[in-house]
Image (cartoon, rainbow, N blue to C red; front, side, top):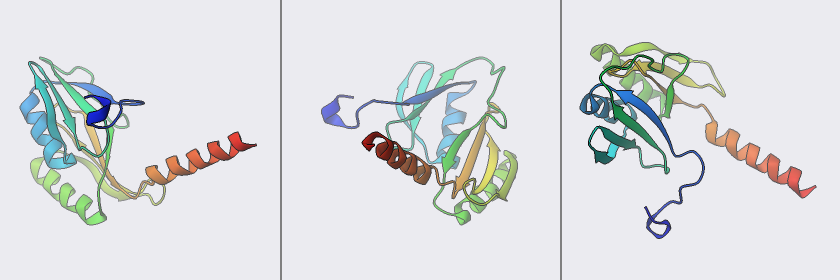
Length: 147
């Protein structure tokens, strides 16, 4: 993507994971993380929620010997506690709910762990305050530089 066409690629842009079935994984991340395929080529797909220039790169692999497992995981913020509850009910029915939902209060929030088709862990959460923490950190760094 050119700079004039959209966001500039600076900073963390992706995480890459092996996947034994790209279509099953794409369907999982669409259903539970509102991510869609934004790029595809043989044996590779990129998934994005289109909120920032960041993608999950899924690389087709015959097996996945070391999946992300709690506490190594991908984290996705949701709009509300109700959304977490709905996704957990669906995940329970689909047999992919690992744990939750649980409320740990700020800054951890209301969260649950789900298992993708290859055993990678997806955390869905509400109220983790990542944006607030980053903004406060940015302000603190700015104040330090002014001195």
